[in-house]
Amino acid sequence: MLELVKVLGLFAITALAEIIGCYLPWLVLTQQRPVWLLIPAAVSLGLFAWLLTLHPGAAGRIYAAYGGVYVAIALIWLWRIDGVVPTRWDLVGSAVSLAGMAIIMLQPARSV
Image: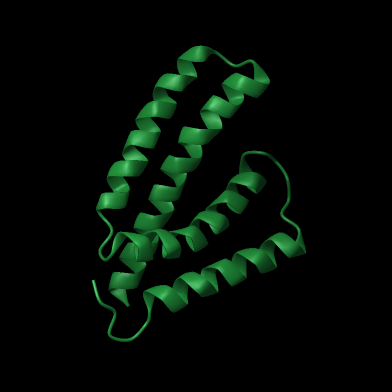
């Protein structure tokens, strides 16, 4: 169980790095924010790529499971950063994504 908590935490940090790395260029391109924001965006995406290497297991399985956590973190971002309250549909979709992540991560006799 502790392993799952660690993996979920790492997934959450990884998702934040990816979201920040994509959000900053979006601000530059659509909201006319300063171009220098592309520098921390590149650093954040580099961090994202490095964080993916820290996850235990086969890369494809990790990416698939990570997607469920990414959806949940993205909806938290929607709410806290964009100021848009997630709908019931958003929350149900996120729950389904997290259930998929749990099925992938908790499968018996998981091979690396």
